[in-house]
Length: 440
Image (cartoon, rainbow, N blue to C red; front, top):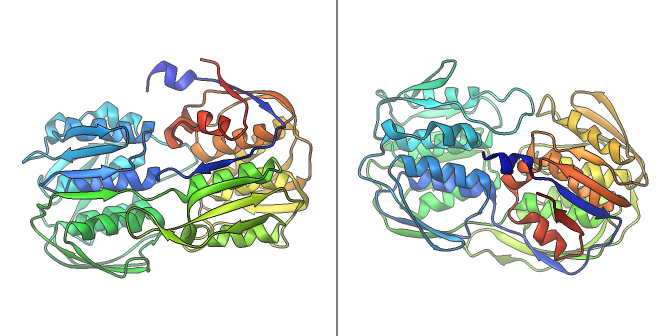
């Protein structure tokens, strides 16, 4: 990461309503997963609706160092052409260190060509312990051994074979890693307790276009029929991001605004919308239509100014189809404007709930019950303040959402975590009525 990326600050003049309409962009987590899966294909893959954000560019830098040819056909369309042999000896380790943990998704494609290699540890959000135990257990059942050293993962795929595995924990990335690895191992691989989140389904949709048969997409049991050769020129459209849709919903609700959010992946927002309705948020949902990938169901959501109330039960994340873990933080700024006491339980991460209390700097009344739970007492009148972004994407974003509602001037320092996951987000928020100025 360059110094300018890390030090960028923004000024927000808050307390203004949002208005108009905004379209949901493509999903960052889907983009990185499909890029990783594209390395299995010996023929070119053309991806449409590619997220142009820092995490994707770091992943592409790593792919390019392996010998993958990148051709941008326009601002959002990219053709990736892998070499005959991925050049693991030329891997850009710094790109991995600067990138997120999604770089581990390259393992399956590299292991299909190199039976023994080292892979550097990656960067990413700092929210507590994030081990690769689920990856290690799942891939070991497919004959791919991972040994962790201080600087590298030592990979041994000499015994790779199709088989049966049960996920160690509810991990989206581990599920993707197993699917991508199994796609290039001939035979039938069965994955129990597979996750069915949007990015996992996206990988399946892409692999199916390559001719890989996958049974049970969208369920907790997947059967992947792997092939030794994948050589299919293909075009694929990346689906939209339910986490970005939720961010705009939260921004509208927290600022008591009327806002139209288009291209919302409804299957990955249903549980969130039920909870929002219980909190008194008024909204309408359009008829469903399909994304350009032909698979993801989209809707348009109109959020209306609402008198929010604390929900009767705690709000917590669950594996799909529950509230998405990445969507859970957006209930915090909403709860600051809800009458009553809201309990938000972030059981998945050891430290992320600690960052929620940063909104207290804006006048919120958030009490930390323990490292996983916060009580939000509302409503409170938010006011401008200076806050440094935490080293994590979603907690940084909920501070920005809160600043949109905070009367007066706020400064959010070191916004690189936000740029990692949201494309042109300050400009796009300004287009719907926010007042954000990039300071450096």
